[in-house]
Image 1 (tube, helix red, strand yellow):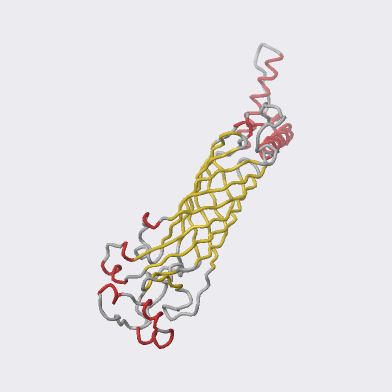
Image 2: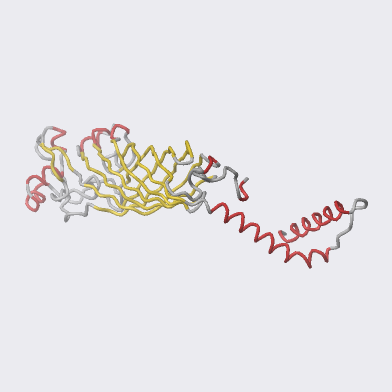
Length: 321
């Protein structure tokens, strides 16, 4: 179907060219013409496409920037992974470096520092509130992402100064959950509040999200980057499995682990509540999510199409005119 269409276009174009040089009756171009000249025309058309595309992707360059915003999380202590509480949003800061392969594709390496937290007292569900657990942790986030710009970002001479983008990549999160007990911050990971061996405080993650970038000048950009990180740990909040009964946990891991493993007694203002070993403590999900929403400020550094016209012509080139 495509071949028939292109042949028709080729025949009509040839008729118009002949008519322009020899006014009068519109000449008839036989179908055999298409069979003879179609391969030649297609080669020239493909070459034209490659040249146009090469001109577009020549807009390469390095972008460096910093970002500030907020961090949050969804997990067992955000209403059993159901709610995202804005009251648990914390300040986050970071930096990034991007390499733009062209106006469409870029690779970004970023590093961020923030805080995540959660507490059962945020929930309106009395069963969740009675669990009475809480945590707070720093969040170290690093990742390498591929970015796809739609419709394309080319700040040179403000040619395409604004574009949205999608990103996905691979990264890591580091964390260390703590909680307050008797007025003191306590590290939860060494205690084994579920009778488990000490879990790793570093997890792989998959960052993904959306953003927007706007070139104020061809060397300076503002933007917004909103993304989630799917982690491969369910212990960012120290909750991920089942209860161990109070006497059993007391005997195996000590008094502090037993006290923080089940805090329902504190909520009810009673002695420690004893539940059978194996009773659900977490919500059953396999992993926690972290979130970063960041405002970005960046500079385009390399003088190869992505940045300003320092000593260059203002004339646009290529097939994007």
